[in-house]
Length: 186
Length: 186
DNA sequence: TTTGGTTTTTGATTTAGGTCAAAGGAAAAT
DNA sequence: ATTTTCCTTTGACCTAAATCAAAAACCAAA
Image (cartoon, each protein chain N blue to C red):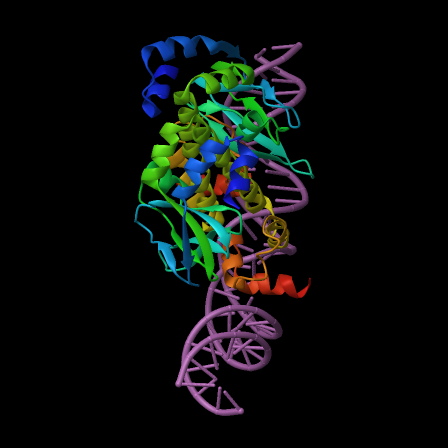
């Protein structure tokens, strides 16, 4: 749950938690629903309680490219859009019926100003996210299609057989035909 | 200068700045010097006052892969190693005689605890860095060698003709032969 | 349980960019 | 200045993965 996630990074006090948690609002979201579209401001930060989400964008020639998958117990948003209040480069979509906990930008800003621990939490969360992106970048930059898939299995062990193959292929920067052939040879 | 960089992101007060700035220590570093090696903890955060740096790693078959370039007025470090105090995956190297301003992890921690504005600054800095990495990832994930080079020219306009071509090629995930041919056809 | 729509697989062909090898250029070092 | 080392270019060839095109498998709804 959110509490565990919060205290894993920063030792929030009980009072702080009691004040913070109610700002997260439970939302049931149906499969294939969009949370934000390209160009919109991302006004909420989501925590995935159940289900799977992904961020993606469309290339100029209309191809759908998955940018990231968000599994259970992870925060989900278009990070820079949310915190910098810039138009999102991505669509945010839910791939299964999901339970999300959302907090608005306004409330988050309030909590950031009120609690230094919250500032610290978001700082550490961002650094963790950064490390994950760097990890993907290294996998993609110089590795073969098969090695990329191996990375994917390690990074998202529980996700890789619950989402369409095409989403995974585009996430890895390869075609779905290639990924299909890779899977055939184990 | 550092001051400008700090107040660009967060409205530090004069007192805060007067307290914070002296913790940055000026260092003259000669071309090709290493600031940290792979596996070491990154114990300092550097601000580039003059010169160029890069981070890189060696693949298992010994190839040198540039991960990032750091130009003037940018912070330079192995971010996650510095903040999470984990062993660095990268080497950090200076590519020209440079002037750096460094702050130790210990002093940074002290300032982070003392000033909420400092927490905020690092949070925003990290989000900015994250956005840059995401930008590179998108360029690398689905673009041709030529398009990658175009991205590089936009991201590092002043750097691209001051560093060896091989460093740029590996940064973009292509071979130096390919980059050389791209450059020939403008 | 048939129908229509996704997804995935398979095969044939093409191509961007990699690899290998060697020759030029530039720039440090002596 | 001239040697030595490093960096870049050029050419010939090769390969991993893309593209194109169908067929097969899977699902979901009526």
